[in-house]
Image (cartoon, rainbow, N blue to C red; front, side, top):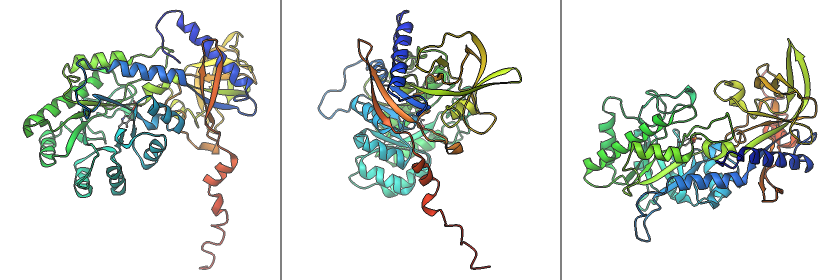
Length: 462
Ligand SMILES: *Cc1c(COP(=O)(O)O)cnc(C)c1O
């Protein structure tokens, strides 16, 4: 939802939200025929991008001259919402795009990002991927010295790509191990604290005058601001050290990654981009002094609060003294929430079949999904208005990752995703982002073209 500060705005947000849900039901985007769908708040995305851009306005004016690069390039981490209309909106708002696979690069290009505003990060780039990125002029961050060796061999003479090296400042883990990229043994980047690590980084720059960027992505969910800014401070120190050693400003940009955590406990974002930028300025006062172009790669913090999932309650039942609502949103959509409920708790809203907030008495309920395994529960023992068949549950703050990291469990279809906007008079407009996956598409993905392929295999030899 749009982020606001005044105290009455939470009700404004709630009213706006209820209007969107009512209209979605009235328009048939959610209901018996479409029992689950995703929604993206386009007004909210615009506001969040503006907040990000405002937070990083550098203190001194931009460098003069027509060829001076913009001092800050904010890229969006495509994996957080790999939907072309969303990427296209972000490109239109002036963002670049961080990609990490041939698929993400393809959709970023199709969404309209100029190659020079795309950054390719991946720990497993093939020679072909490196070659393609360099031919297009896409920036890339090498994840290891071995990858730098490949780039040495593949880099054309007239290469326009900005090339960087990803380092791991090894500042430690946050509260979720699987989301911590800067542990001592993380698979990402060059481990700075390992014996000889720093000296080898300096040497790598000395040997390659075209290597001009240093990259670190310290995050993400579960990592406190101090950990993230400590990682960036360490990266900045290293850049100064390299430039001093080579005797010129060889490193001209710092890619500080994304990884700003999102609070899932309420509508107001915490920490804000402004708080992040302030913490960064405090940790590295000279970061935005104009000597380094800054690149960021935020994903979750740009989209999470700007999307929600709506799902129909198909049945309710009681088991072992617990009320359970069986809905159409489970592990296929909220995979991390179902598999790691303590790390990824979601706020759940209860609405009736017409999209009006439920006013029934509160009771403790499990909100379960449609998947055929016992753990498919998105919210355990949650106190909510009593739900019944035909009601709608809303999973809040699911605009990042939930629509782009579908799990094909039980051949459940990827749901439709719709964008929405509201005007001053409360009117709601929708636009399609992605159609629901059809049974034909599921069949095709399931090898339909080779339906008989196994029937004769091996029979001749017997
Ligand atoms: C995933 C990722 C990001 C975005 O992380 P968020 O936590 O969504 O902000 C940025 N950079 C890299 C290299 C990533 O892998």
